[in-house]
Image 1: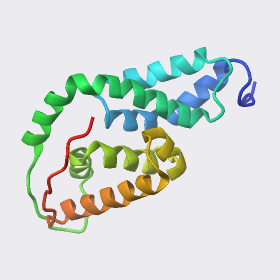
Image 2 (image 1 turned 90 degrees about the horizontal axis):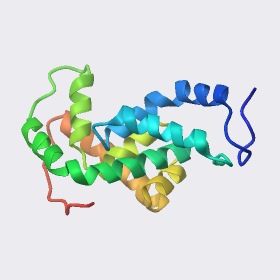
Image 3 (image 1 turned 180 degrees about the vertical axis):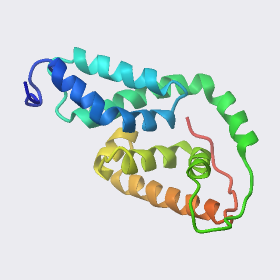
Image 4 (image 1 turned 90 degrees about the vertical axis):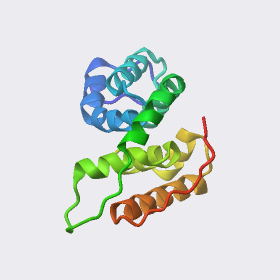
Length: 172
């Protein structure tokens, strides 16, 4: 059985498995930006997809939205702990060669504010369009693009050791 038409009855198990194999790694990466229980969030999202009847029209965007909603519910309870971890993880460094250390880049990505981080992950690893990202995070298309560009700029500055922190108003 192949991919069913959007809006049709529940998704068949073969298609569900294919979608999981194809998209779960990027969804887990996205979920990691929002929660410490990324695997649980992804599995819960796919369970919910299996129960949807009719199935969502834009399945991938729907999965991202479900994961985001689940993660935001968990986010509030773990915000203080994550804040302490980020403070401990902050360190200034200099790039000594042209190679990019994946662990360092990942650490720096976690230091970005949530708004920038989730847009970058959804765009680069999730392959979502800016329109889908804007819908996912509940902002305008221009704001999604601005967060993406600002986030990449801040990452570059951090990698080059030129970043100067500025005060940001906390968001929920």
